[in-house]
Length: 380
Ligand code: SAH
Image 1 (tube, rainbow, N blue to C red):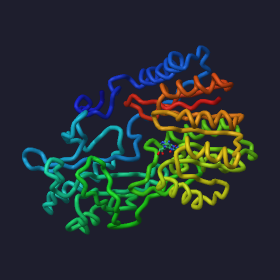
Image 2 (image 1 turned 135 degrees about the vertical axis):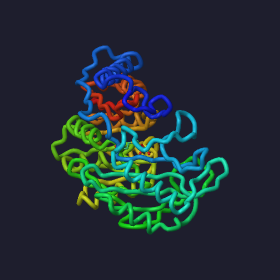
Image 3 (image 1 turned 60 degrees about the horizontal axis):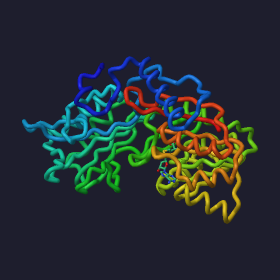
Image 4 (image 1 turned 180 degrees about the vertical axis):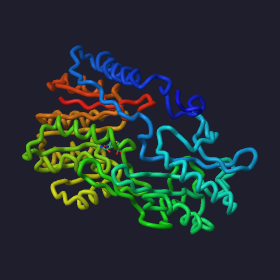
């Protein structure tokens, strides 16, 4: 492995494999799951889409801050399955600018005697440093998550961070809970705006410190383009996007469809989805808050909703059976399944294909080089 901390850090599971072998491993993983769990024998898979540059692909990093035995402020990564910080400002998956930003933050803390948070005692101020960068906009965000309401000498930190090219947002996020949840509910802007913007395809998004946003924008665009192509839109279709998050897939498809509906369980994500629709001048996307397995059956029973195409992008546990049953009743011509766990994908495809659907084609995408996960998009 390239990274000297590979063994201690829990972040990368397969960095010791050459990238070529990583892709082979992931393609086999998908194929094996479809075969053994799904019972598929003929699997029409297109070749896996890997990355040209399998390092430095993450647009977001959250560094825990602590104090070492000698009393120095340290930042880096938790050792696998622990909360011991391994000092490392140079994670190979993150952007080179992370190091520059962390150097400034740690120097500032040392100079002004700002303490790091201690999980054991619940004392100390700075818990995490969150960094985000828009790949297409090159806008940068730094957010210090603090155990308190204000940062002494914050203006000095701002002065140093502002000099970084593309710096757009510097903020504090207050989290005084004795919890390992990273972000609190309140964000205070120290300088610039609360959010940065970024683009996927021709859709632009506002990203605040607390927003969910895909961490690998290069592969995300490839995945959405594949979903769009499998959806086969001509402009006349009604499309449902289930598990839509901040509406990224919905908006990506909206320009080529007649009407798009998104369903998502997190209310804040739906607020972002609606705002992103307005931001992009898209008026044929409508969003519902709730569980897909409740919203969809309810709307089907009460309003008799219809779909030409349904896209699902569920979390790792896959789709709820109630949701699949309603999809079967709605009977869309095309069903596009975007999956981050090929085992539950195989389980759900087996069910759908036992009820009349046919697995037409699929493709794996390496969204997390050096890690074990793989994304898959299939067309039924
Ligand atoms: N399609 C989006 C998000 C996919 S992640 C994107 O590409 O960015 C899966 C999403 O499903 C998350 O936003 C999660 O909050 C949501 N989710 C989880 N369980 C759900 C459920 N039962 N019903 C609806 N949404 C759910």
